[in-house]
Image (cartoon, rainbow, N blue to C red; front, side, top):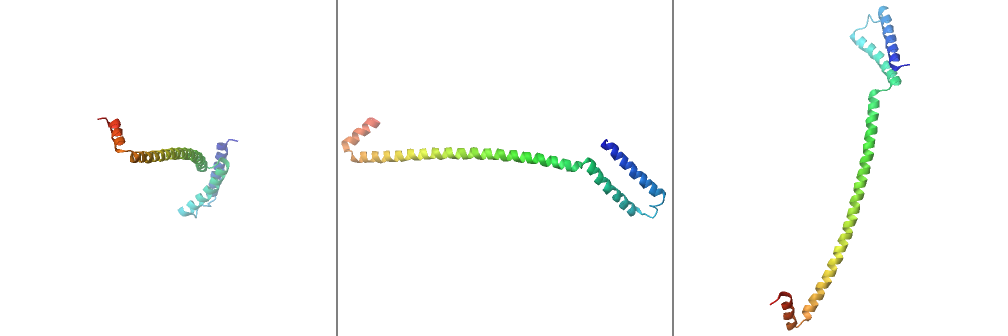
Length: 137
């Protein structure tokens, strides 16, 4: 049976019941406050039946948004994990480059010490000759 037909039948049945009760004078002593209470008392079971039969639109929207948010969160975490992995690889690469530069600096320090020793051990004539060879006249 179509959901709308079932809802229509329930609404018509409730209106008929309310009409019969009104004809018999059941609502004569009620004030506006009483009407509000009566309508609320009728609306609550109607909404419960409607939500049970057809589902709650707001709850469905909430569940849909929650599922989308979960998907986005999972994708965001995957993206962040990938970025973190890339940064860690870059750090490891930079560490290797830094070790290589340190090794080169150590080699240059050793060469510098060797040159200083050679210059210190050179005679004055050898020093003059070396300056002429390097810088010309």
